[in-house]
Length: 284
Length: 330
Image (spheres, each protein chain N blue to C red):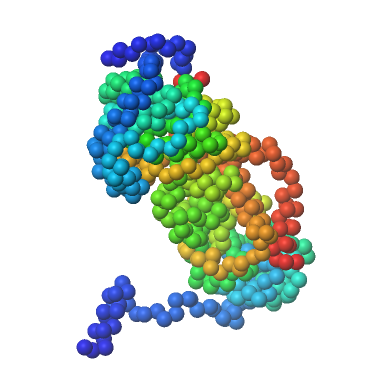
């Protein structure tokens, strides 16, 4: 038996077509920063918004990835509450840097960045997530071809019977919104992109509370679409907890509940779902 | 077609009481009823559909029964301290209703209330055969869970066991729910968590149930819900919730938890297996699914109303920035 034939068998077993070339490196190559212009375009089409807090270790690679999404691109880094040289590195990488000595608060950087953005497409990512341009481009392209909200096609781990409370909230919010097809995709997760139209409709302030922005986008009839999967859960750093209580989780959960409230305000107390012919007047 | 003796007055649930025929045929002697049920037990056991025999817990009960060789040895938990009311709602369940009634009688309840709505088969006649049952008959369809609410209103017991006429559940399985309430639980729920698929594959209804419990700080309840039967309530719970709210079971559940009632899982009865597949409860986006999602929306409305009253929205911005600082160990 020749070597070729044996190879073929293994390909069949793994479900891969024998003719297909084996991709040794599944992770896309990171583009070297030097290859791209290290300045913001004067008339940007895409604004990449990167909130960062003490991310000196990763910020250069994050900006490098962001630069590659579009030839006419501006990178805006919102450095807040940083004790390290995050701002300095971002500046050196040619990004527009907005600095706040105090921490702005979770997701508030997104609002600040959106305020400063001039592009027609706004791409949101985070200072601690190194994502290549190739992985970011689909979001930009989706908005470029008509979507208003381009979401990360990633729900987090859902193999167990019980999902994480935040994942459960995202799924349920989408069900209640009448968009179960969105599974657990949410504006809470980065990367995601917004059209200028979406930003104008929602306003930049609400972006600090992503679950509410998410609900508003669906309720306002914006085109909300899941476009590409970037499994950010694996990249996220494990953060501190206090006596097993995750305070951030509590904020996200209460934002989701408030998003439900918004939905009920807009669509009525059954969120627009029918009563299937219940004759309530029968029982008094 | 129905010749019910309308000897129960004071049920004025609808303006035209001619529509609503109530037949209250209460057995004069409880003892007679008890004997009847003892006789009924083995017959049902023999004639039970194969679906039941395939399940493990039931096989054990059946095995025990065989080993004992006598009908009296069927283990039903100790006698209840409180009076048991069993409330069965049904619509065209002539096939299963008599079998369920037999099982219910074995529990020796103080009363059995059967609420029939929109029946076009002989459910009514068959229900009347159970001498102890109070049969409420509403000719036209009343909608989901309206029967429960109506039955609860009519009930007088201390323990209210809610069942659906389309599902035959054996007496020993039912007994656990009544016993839980007798032992101090206010809302005894059916625990279906062990039967759920991975979250990624679960349906929208299950997710809504999980979410409601989680929001109310009771993730331990899993997907247990008053939407599912069997479940039992204490009289105290019924009074705290209000019988009208039982029409929207998730809302009733939210109110129970908000009012600090004791809500607990009280056993597992696989209702998925027996649930009758109908046109309106199968497939994604079916009518029943839409209904239950809407019910959960109503429940969340109740949660929001109460939680908003309790906490002022206030300095959220400040909270957020403090939180960020704390998380990044500044």
